Amino acid sequence: MAGPCVNDGCIPTKALVASAQAAHVARRAADFGVTIAGAVGVDMKAVKARKDKIVARSRTNVENWVRGMKGCTVYIGHGRFTGPKQVGVNGETLTASQIFLDVGGRATVPPIPGLDSVPYLTNTSMMDVDFLPRHLIVLGGSYIGLEFAQMYSRFGSAVTVLEALPRLVPREDEDISAAITDILESGGIEVRTGAKALAVRKTGEGVAVEIETAQGKAQVDGSHLLVAIGRRPNTNDLGLDTAGIKTDARGYIEVDDQLRTNIAGIFALGDCNGRGAFTHTSYNEFEIVAANLLDGESRRLSDRIMAYALYIDPPLGRCGMSEADARKSGRPVLMAIWPMERVGRAVERSETQGFMKILVDRDTREILGASLLGVGCDEVVHAVLDLMYAKAPYPVLQRAMHIHPTVSEYLPTMLGQLKPLS
Image (tube, rainbow, N blue to C red; front, side):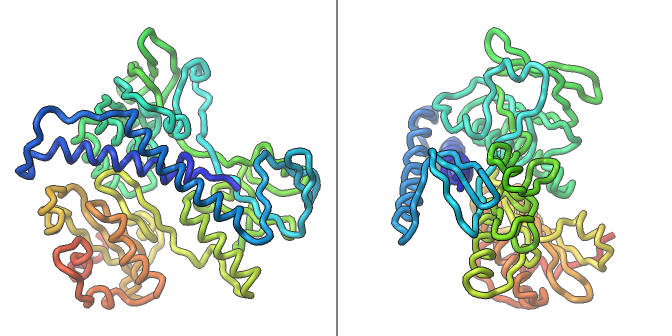
């Protein structure tokens, strides 16, 4: 079992996001009629110490919980298969009829010429940073890279994001990508899309990245480089071939709809199976396996609705289909869009960037998905997600009385504005 979430994933990064947001709000105090004497400063050592304290508490709580389980023995070491149902760790051989793999993942490091000669950062090594980079170059314009880009911009670093593809977070709809770009650029972040990294080299004061764009070659100079172009599973040193466990071309362990590998009694959960790579998907997979093995149920991966969030500020909450997915499906789709500048709660907080978009099937009237970008939308999205799991028709939500003033209260209003996709 691995612990990216506790050690260098969700918990520490969101602790850092909270510190960055506090600095951002403090600098905007005058917008709310609040006076702060002097400039707002950020003590990066204190920021890191706060993050470390939160991580240590979470890690200790998890470890104590596991060690306290009846019949559970914890081994700290690198386990590898030594046979089909044998795992070697710390000189011991453990055997079991059922084995569950949840080994996590790590940052992908691309084969860019010169990168191996530069002291680059990843999401893991960023956890050790207790200083303010003068100019942080972020290689990769997706979820991890953008969260770090915004937080360090708010801490006080100059930040440049380099994305090889034509737009940020290409998994999302084009209008969502454009809105996210506007949010970041309005915060002072330089965003360069369609920028392929050709080479990296060390300079006297930092690092230089040679890029190629539609306009030709250019050089981006910075003090530090964060590589955030994707993740890879921690499966290369597990002895999977010894156990006969199949993996795909990217190293992900192949599983069926109930998380079973090709070897009976061996299951793969979490980042290493390529079916989600989120903490919540990993925990959901534990629930699926446990229910099937212990409770006689028949739960499946295909029963769940994909949902996730991008924790920039304001956040993106996503569930189900995107607009692009809906168009490709061939289904008769209705869509409604509502700008955050028309949401009372957003106006009250002076946080009106973003918009909410919801999609429904015209015939079944079931909700197909939502992309909600705005203040509080990482929580608001669950109102939509729960209705989707209930397979309830959208008028159930449209007729619900929501509390005012909130962001969620506009979901029923939005559903009254549904129109066919053009």
